[in-house]
Amino acid sequence: MSDGREDRPALDRWFERVFDDDESSRLGSGWLSGTASVFLGALGPLHLAGFAEPALYAYLVFVSFHAVFIHAKVRLSFGALESLLVTPRFHHWHHARAAEARDRNFAVHLPWLDRLFGTTHLPRGEWPDGYGITGDPVPEGYLGQLAHPFRLDPTAP
Image (cartoon, rainbow, N blue to C red; front, side, top):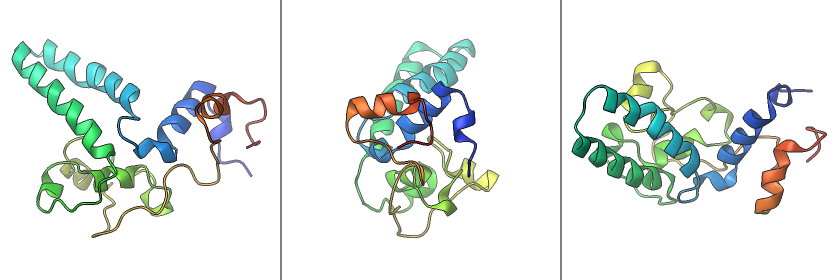
């Protein structure tokens, strides 16, 4: 039975597997996609809107540290901060394998955006049991993971 993943373009499947596997929660693993989204989705429009360079640089520093912070494997409670700023627990649920967490927690900095759109999944005090895509094992090792999305038979492990 197909879930439609193999019908998508190879590059789309590659990005999904690279950024949604068990390794995605390690420090800095989302650097490429995060960097692209910062420059294309935030800095460009902010620059065009006329923000001063020091403000752009301050935002860039914040985003750089925040991206590493939310991907860190630190199981700490941040209390009231969790309602104001995306924390590791919030973002880990975005990468969770659990069905109830699928398509949830899209906010990069401000979790109230997910609350506004009804996409928050943050069970009190809980962390995901696993990460990645259910039913789609990713090979061990760097080269195996790079080649995995380009295999000739997309149903083969």
